[in-house]
Length: 271
Ligand SMILES: NC(=O)c1ccc[n+]([C@@H]2O[C@H](COP(=O)([O-])OP(=O)(O)OC[C@H]3O[C@@H](n4cnc5c(N)ncnc54)[C@H](O)[C@@H]3O)[C@@H](O)[C@H]2O)c1
Image (cartoon, rainbow, N blue to C red; front, side, top):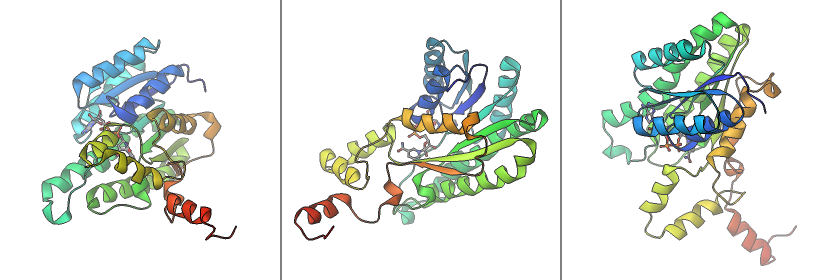
């Protein structure tokens, strides 16, 4: 897909999925604004985009702060003159027993994952409404459909992102603006590295996860980026208010694949 001349903002683009999206858009010809709270990683990601031949700059941004989000939009307009797409990807994952959580834990997750998505959208939308054109893609999660124990704030934030996506999609459809979500399953980023590092038996932990993913593997950030790219492209011109899952079938699964397969092999399941 060709994005020559397209201007995008990707939040949380200093690493992981956001970096994958920034690089994929750069490869497709877009001008990329990398927004991240981590200055070193943000600068490196912008440099990597430029290395692919794309105009790119880093704007230090904490998406939980309204002033930062307003400045991010202003800096993009100043440098590139317009915003064709905003990819709200910045997020923090958080797992902790509910009875050990305090108010600050809740606030941190909701402020970045939900409020940050709203704030960046709000300032970018003001510009998109003037142009009668624009695209927003919110990176949600499989947690919009089903969740895990000890993940209440994260599940609440991502569930909120999905419904906010629908609310903004219908409010701004009359202005030619499309708003969609992408819900990744297990993706090869720092989160996946942390899961394995925290396990007593990393190989058993890997296998446990893979047994619960019909495609039997973790996905790359680029695989998520390809879905985002499709959504902002004209190929998705009638898609708005959608939540597209890129999860290897994880949320379609009711029972563990390995157990089912072994029973089938033992002849216990009639085909
Ligand atoms: N990795 C997965 O398996 C997975 C699955 C589903 C959804 N997601 C979602 O994808 C998104 C990216 O996750 P990831 O796995 O790439 O994580 P990551 O930790 O690799 O990257 C997150 C990036 O966001 C930045 N960030 C954090 N707080 C910020 C803030 N307040 N303002 C601006 N930037 C901030 C970080 O500095 C980092 O560069 C998140 O929204 C996450 O919830 C990830």
